[in-house]
Image (cartoon, rainbow, N blue to C red; front, side, top):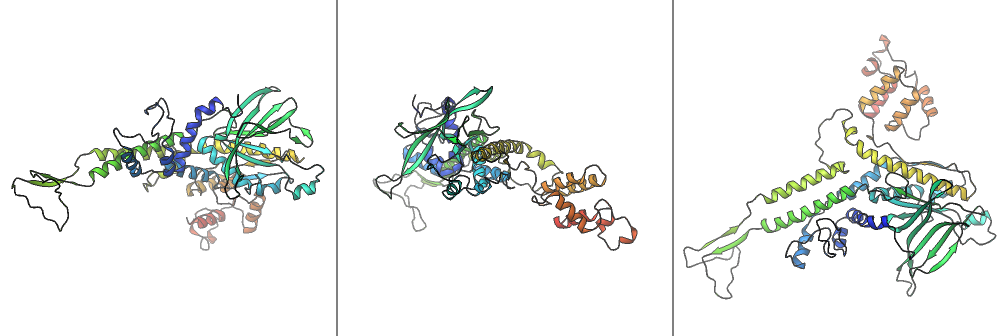
Length: 507
């Protein structure tokens, strides 16, 4: 079998990935890539092999008519907006990491392509949400000159780094049982190179294939060119020793697993395309029914005679029974299409684009919004945790490469609740603390999650500031003589901290 042979699960899912990519990219991608040479067999589309995948052609439509039909259709890109919003929810709070000193400087350019650690992790998460699959690889330059010292290596930027691989570039993979554990023993990656062979000003794209596998001699890396010929073969060393593992991690939407997982947005993508088809029919109907069509009855025109419309033209017919007028649409068909469009927009909101639903501006009970979005947050939390686990392992591989302790820790945000704490929750927390139901440390953690206390503040600093500001927050101001000098809310039994927090929140 050739090196570019694809895994059977890759073949089953590549059209799903393409569908997700096209819809996320928007209208231009849907229009240009919608005329594919392969159809999704087993669906309502004609499975014979050619035609218009995303927007089926109406019967007897000519190419020019179909082009106008497709051009009139509006594309409401709920999927792309949802991807941006969900990624933004995870990165609303910066990733937290704790790294060995030896690899901390690498975070400003983790990929040796001017991408810092935060940007790299954001790109990784975006792929998880978009198609439910991505790969990261820890690598080390193979062409290191002999006798290079540590100082020279630093000057030459010879150090471990990370690579990111999209789902479509992970062509093949295999796992095996090694030392009673299932591990990755082979993966084939497709890479694209920019080459200027014949003209320095003309950049051509060339493919190459990177094969990572485990052999009895250890971890091996082979490079094949676009002609599928072997170009290089190396056995990377780690601190001068052969490696017994492949430093490559495949992430799904729910876990770090080589099995292909369902794209989180696929149901939203399909509904988005259904909305697009309804839009095409709706705009097509408007085009033919929104513009009145003139008619003339009881008149025999001479050969070559035409009738002109306009305020400067008069029609005079000898037959008094002649009849003229405009044909106008009076049916309810377009109303049904409009209802279908709105229904699909609401369905897309339920499928993950809740921020696109109409804001009814109604007051909701405390906690109602939290319950509404719990499903979306649970999916995001799974993506965030799997990304954190994979990045932690990759950073520890980098640490091992430079001889540093494997103590790297990396974590992404998993708190996707309201950005600011609600006043009811603030009051409840303060009451629980004052009633000795929770310790000060728990109050502090909740205030941080509610974005009332800075996420960078340490608990010890928080305690010190409380001591510096005056009386203990556990001592309510109850002395009658002080009621004239303090805020009425404090006089009612609230303490200095609660009053301060309320003032800052404008409550």
